[in-house]
Image (tube, rainbow, N blue to C red; front, side):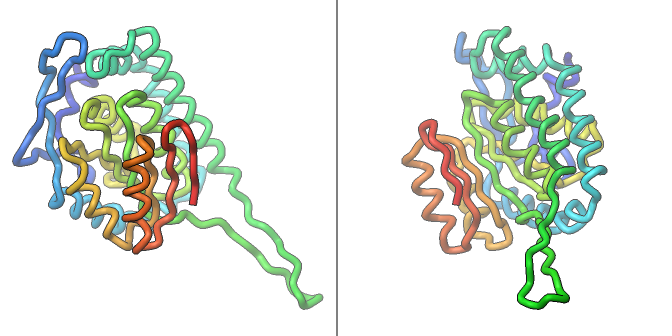
Amino acid sequence: MERVVQTPRRAFLAGSWQETIHTFPVSNPATGDIITQVADCGPAEAKQAADVAVKLFEAWKNRTVYERADILHRWYHLMLTHEEELGRLMTIEMGKPIREACGEVRYAAGFVSWYAEEAKRLPGEIVPSQFAHKRLLVIRQPVGPVFAITPWNFPAAMITRKAAPALAAGCTIVIKPAEQTPLTALALARLWEEAGGPPGTLQVLPAQDPVPLSEVFLRDERIRKLTFTGSTAVGQQLFGQAVPTLKRVSLELGGHALQV
């Protein structure tokens, strides 16, 4: 338990656990006690993470779907192996009852298992041509590096619901977890590393103020996808900021999902 719970304090950046100049406290909402201090990432860390996600995209994309699925399956089994530890960590940082928290770990792991198998079911299409002797082949390709912003209330499930499909499809992903609950995200990153996830394919950048960090990814035209779960007001702002670089956008705002 100590290995999983005590490890996540640094940012998981560029395939390693990195210190930052500044940190911020994570508190137990039930008692108000400070649990630990975590890395407080800003624009410099965001730029580094974006560069790494872009650099590694081609290599991850070119892995076979079976290779990616094998890593995801190992990630899934590690989550189940550490169900109680992850559940306790979730309870401490966001107040969810331990029974419900452990249930969320299984729920979160389920997304990983599902998309590990769906990675093998991304067939193309044969489209009729205007020429009798020809056929047109359509193949599906990963959209590119992904930036994900997740909420505090499901700190495990909202991570895997975004990361698992991205990784299964061949996209690299950078996650900005809610400032109230970064520890679960970092613990999941530690298990991704243990599962053999290639360094830099998944990165986790905690930030007390998400705006300066997020703006780096939103302005970067190399980041091709934004996925966000949170309030409608913030979602509207992010949508507008994603327009100039023509990012694909998935938003879950106030319980309603929107994909563009």
